[in-house]
Length: 319
Image (tube, rainbow, N blue to C red; front, side, top):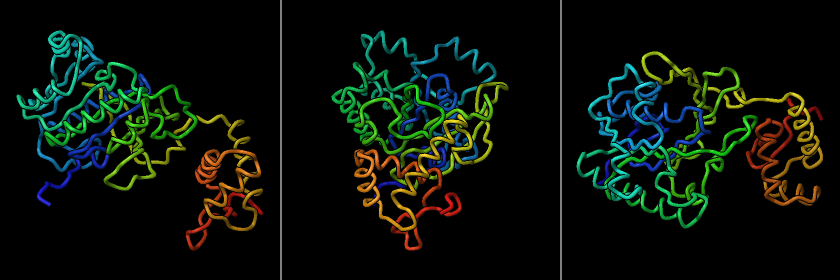
């Protein structure tokens, strides 16, 4: 009860006292967004029209991606606020025999009184692959300890594999062991809109502290003065996915056939559907869970009036 309440810094996308992840494919603009988040927090201003309930805070940005020449080219007219601190990574690595760990961050927090840490990117603090459970577990334990010990907010940048731009982004697209997904409080992903080469969208795929929103935030790259994004609107993710019409029609037809075969004109609970599907198509229950999720995404099935069972959506599938 004596703890201070969590506050929004980048709306519900990033709040105080959270261990969060910002993930996306290489070249999609994660670093651009991370710099904009750091700038807004350091100034205490709203970020992409999202509420910031905090006063200006000191931000430690550990940038393993961009060197000074990259920074000069990208942010040629940008004047960073005093609270935006970007330690010299080369100097850190030389002094610590090429390693970067939480002890370094602890010392920097003590020196600067920073309350927000951004690490770009997560592989910098892994001596082995993030797929290795022992490595992932140790990293997440160390960062959780740092968060609690110093009451800081931490944002980790992470890569995703080459996922197809035809399907929705999911938490398990984030590279690394599932232990990473279990430890983090919040995760947002950056996707590329199929509507415009300069448009991206931000999707929240995990949040322990608030309900996730079905909508994604649409943003657009602004090349004026310094690379940053402009807020456009909120929209359905499906409107921004790259769609192959032929494959999409075939996929939907298959799903319609499954819905008619398993549910028909009746109703069915989640578990009954999974069992019947697995039995009829000789598939695993896990596969059945994916199918029911796809049926919901295509709006081919809906909940009944009691919100207990699934029925076919008559507006999409004539019976």
